[in-house]
Each structure stands twice: as structure tokens, then as C-alpha cells.
Image (cartoon, rainbow, N blue to C red):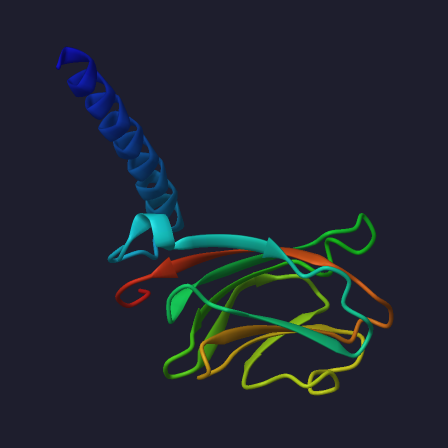
Length: 153
């Protein structure tokens, strides 16, 4: 019986530490009002190689959140990074900080929607985040999304 309680307490202690770390991160960003489900609120991935005039999309974990995007190759990372707040239910995007060759918008991106020589990030009412590559060559990006429940301040 004691071993069962010890294992249970260790499991809860690990969860508390994870939640505390997430809350510390969110406190630093200053934008979180409510976190819906910690285990489901953070997702990450990679676009793979997106051809010039190509588009990658994924379903956001929550309709409101923050996207962090960084170039997966060593060339052009400073120009192609982004931190973007978004909402998909009533689409809007806000560039928190973006590289010189990144634009943000709303709507479905089709490959030639955004400005030439730029990467465009978009949120749409279909619940998806779109990343359009018009940089002039193939490129790949890594992304992380932090889903929020409630409003961003």
C-alpha cells in the first residue's frame, strides 16, 4: 500500500512541476489569462520542405493562441522567424515580433496569396494556421503553438 501511495505522490509531484513550469513561462509572456487543459495546450511540429509558392497548414490546438515559428535551416533564420498571436474563430493575427521577411494576415493562403519574397502566416476560421513560402526557394520551419482559453490581453 505504501508503494502505491509513493508512486501516486511522485506522479502528482511531476505534474505539479510541469504545470508550474508552464505557468512560469506564461507569466513571462504576460498574455495568458486562462489555460484550458495544460496537456493539450502545447503542440509542436515541423513543416518539412515547403516549395517556393507552396503552403503548409495544421489545425491549431485551440482557437486562440501563440505561434512561434523559426527557420529549420541555417540560412535566413533571422529574416524568417515569427512570434504571432492568433484567433481562428473570428480570425485575427497580431505580430508580436517577426523577421523582416514575414507577414501576418487572415484567410486561406493558396501559394501566391502573400507578398513575393516573403513568408506569410495566417489564421483562418477553419481552425487552421497557414504558412506560405514565397521566399524564392524551398524552405522548412519548426513551429510551436501554445493554445489559450480566454482572451489575450
